[in-house]
Length: 338
Ligand SMILES: Cc1ncc(COP(=O)(O)O)c(C=O)c1O
Image 1 (cartoon, rainbow, N blue to C red):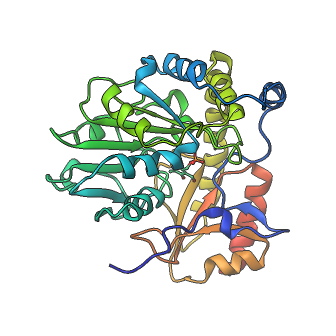
Image 2 (image 1 turned 180 degrees about the vertical axis):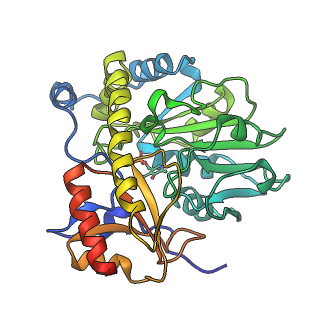
Image 3 (image 1 turned 180 degrees about the horizontal axis):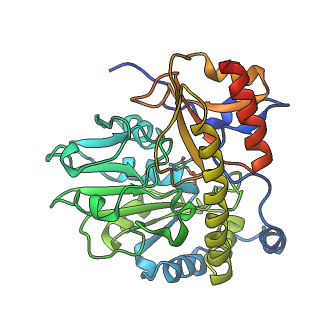
């Protein structure tokens, strides 16, 4: 297996002066009401996660014992790798590479299931003896949303099914989310608050699973791992008005994404992975392995494809921004391809 830089992420593509289409968080700052909440935090006291855990549990119709708050979804992957000893860890690619990196760093062997375009998963793709399966939904970088029923079909006795839902709130009504599902044995859902709320620097996420899985993960977690401001975000972003705000943002995102796809569809040699569901789209630019650098020369930072297993440098991931940025990006892309 070729050695890819699994620890390369979109933020490494940025440089001063470039338009950022590489990082997949919502552009701009957190909303003012969230910043106001953060201003009132007592930073002198050690963080107490109880209220935040209850708030997250309520938001997903679950019990607090089914919730573990983490320093972003990224911490959850490390806890998973430390707390479990899978013999057949399997990661469905192309997807975010940190779960595989964390599993390998903890000494586990990892098998890859490499989906081919259009990157839709079928239960038969995953080997029967996989006792830990990691899949993203919607998936970074393909933006593909797998059907909840398809994912449920991956459940097996003795298997931990880890669904990374870091981008689930990009999907109106969060269709196909398994966050509230409690009747699938071995299901573990990982969520992130960092993207939708523009708080990647704060580190806030959580795991939803059965109490025994949560207890094992919690045992592996450092004391006070989640800061008081991150706990406040967990409470604030689980309130009904925040959930409604995220839902209406998902609808606007969908419109902006449709416009980006419509514009891209008109460019020969560019193919967009169909039916994108997240805050980015994956493009194949046939015959242009230097496309990322050419766009960089035009002032646009996009996420390279080649550090994702299964992709090469003709693939780029592009964040959905407003129509003005889309217009400038599409113009630059056409110039590069001319
Ligand atoms: C699919 C996916 N999962 C998880 C993460 C990590 O999220 P967090 O910022 O909550 O650690 C990312 C970050 O880019 C991601 O793309």
